[in-house]
Length: 116
Image 1 (tube, rainbow, N blue to C red):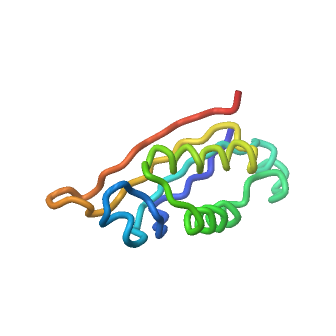
Image 2 (cartoon, rainbow, N blue to C red):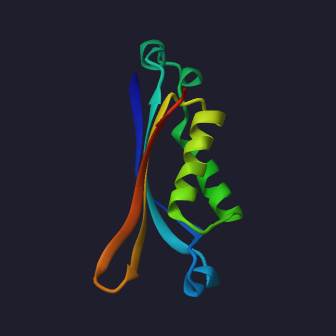
Image 3 (cartoon, rainbow, N blue to C red):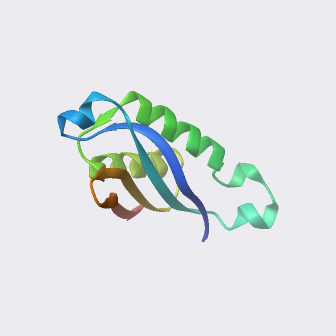
């Protein structure tokens, strides 16, 4: 299996349980790695892989339209999108809120799932 990665994708998202988090979108950082079929590279054919531009666009649109209380729920949502819609066989995501607490650079989650 080959892998595509997207690093330090900054997205405005409605995520959080505290009043200050619910008042306005906040910037989150996503790192995403997902498996793609080996034949994409062998055949040099974009139709046999997952187009990262499509993934980025879809994530941005979905996070703009939804509110998530927990980063864990947001992560599971993106993973389900990758597994079900984009048909990735394996996905790993880390999501971080940036500068949400004094003296803490990032707070986040990391999730890994594979299609069964």
